[in-house]
Length: 263
Image 1 (spheres, rainbow, N blue to C red):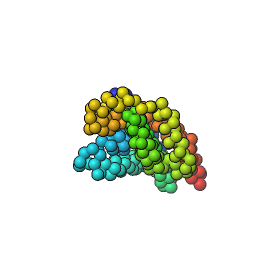
Image 2: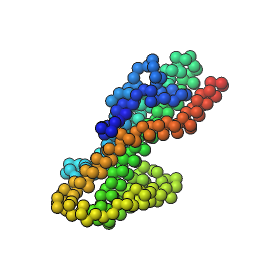
Image 3: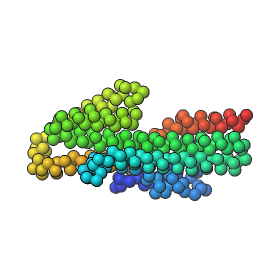
Image 4: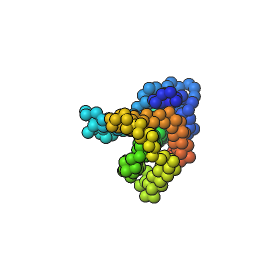
């Protein structure tokens, strides 16, 4: 997993892929490395976070300025392919494990299905959805803070009302409760950034650098800041997603297999 010195995550050790009752998790000993969890292929799960961080930077280049959003979408597509391959791999392993145990064909099919779905659910939360949302909102919050510091209140309000709102809506975090959107915006604005006040000294210093330097700074700092959080969010997100699955899907999948085996 990642360290504070690297923006890319290192490969998680096998002992951190626990979870009893799940077919696709490797045991601490006696099994070869998981191609999708314990090798550099794991980096594919973070392409969308990289895309989110680089979006504003891509808009500064003539060749990518009009396609920056499309490039970010392609990064999600790449992660989706990685998730699908991991889910298929775990489904095959679940099937083989059940077959080697001498279980019926129906149980073998059920084992393949529950193992593949387990991997898909884990990856969706740990690689596809939650980290990208946090990276995007961090990037936009840093942009908001810089604009406030420079005294550009109107630009800051535009970021809060449109860019941060878009990230919240695009990731679907508000769909079941419209009030959640307002709460998230209020939390970002009032609690994270309420102490950021315009600084005339800072604004004058930046103005001496020229408009181009100011623009580059407002792109570079949010980019670096949003990428810098990646090493610190991977472990908590992985642990959180596994905790949710351990207390929801995985017990149900185990009960379903036991019920099917008794009939």
